[in-house]
Amino acid sequence: LLPDWIAIPATIVWLVLMMNSMNWLDTMDGLAGGVGVIAAVILFLVSYSLRQSTISLLPLALAGACLGFMPYNFNPARVFMGTTGSMFIGYALGVIAIIGGAKIASTMLVLGVPVLDAIFVILQRSMAGRSPWRGGDNAHLVHRLLGVGLSQRGIALLVYAICALFGWLATSLIRTEKFYAFAALAVVLVALVV
Image (cartoon, one colour):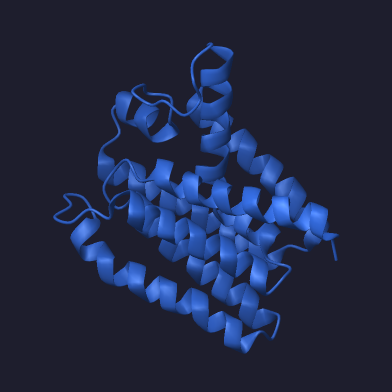
């Protein structure tokens, strides 16, 4: 257990990171909802494998809510979740990762695309002397992929596939191996950006 003076700020940073990562991902039809489904299913599997049967119901309920929304939000979307919806998904996933314990590394793997994308965008904007929180550019990975000719559906499916692959790794690797998998995910994202 961490002392409160570390645990409380770390929890706040974790939740803000999860919320903003999902919010920044929600720039194209179906991205945040689909990634939310994948992440929730992975967190359900991890919780269930840890014999946390009551906690495992929370990600299952979140996955069901996101799945119910997806037919209306996938490209071409008829309904949009907006900032409130994407931040709720990020907050819910962040809380679920904390309350049962032993799921933060799994969450970081399955949500590695939005988390690393957020970190890369903040670094890129900061190094350019701009506010990292101010948008209006094509710094995000999904915008770069759109710029090279991928369709919105293709981008959504690519992001789903990467999240699902690294989510599956999160369920099958032991704790130290997850660090190497996260490094591999970073390499994949840098390669996609390049």
